[in-house]
Image 1: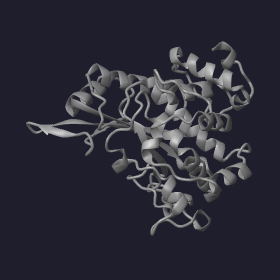
Image 2: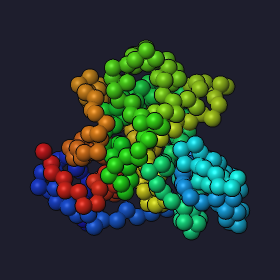
Image 3: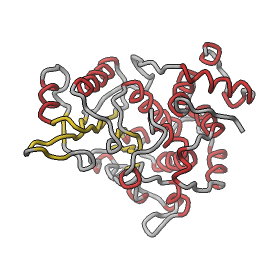
Length: 321
């Protein structure tokens, strides 16, 4: 694996044999928790961790014992909460605005440790949501459109990555985080063509979709309310390595869309040729597409390998076609 971690070229330039050997090595590779991800220090994000089978009272009590959780909150959630004898059981832990600092990554690791210590369950009903500050798109609708295009092109890869340690989506994912590619390609009564979009809300991406822009009220600072982009498709997890790796991918995907690296001609060509896939096909591996995506958005081989490790599930045999 050392040779691949030190590799400075595009993975798509590797031979088929070398790529398949990399996929074999990934079986025993472990993603490591990092002190930081080299994300701009003014870029904030927030996290929501859903869980089941622990009284919310106990979660709040344990959090109150630990410094640093004063601005974290615990709520009921309709997808994973219920009551026993009048007590709320299961719900979500919601973070304040966080940044790419050692302090905040330690806090994230600590809250996940609290939930594991209380024997919180990650089930087929739970999910993990990430909110990213809308300032990443610099108050320019063109960057939002770029992001939606890239997401749609690679949505079948992104969803499988977001399944985390599981190879399958949670049962109600189509109710709470529906894919957007088909709607973006073909439109419907509510979605304008991308060329007509002037405000993020006109994309009609809400809390039923994988991307939620309903909190992205406008591009003008005096009208901002909870101004963020929410990504909702990830399965629930209490694994800090999966959490950090997922945040890293989402943010660097967005940063690519505002960078000089963004290849307008390539993205437009891929988008114009895009055909939507049945959702059941999102569970399959598309090795060439995954490699194209990591080459596109990541500068370092470590990020590429970590993405591919989470994308290719344990025990899965992947061939490059």
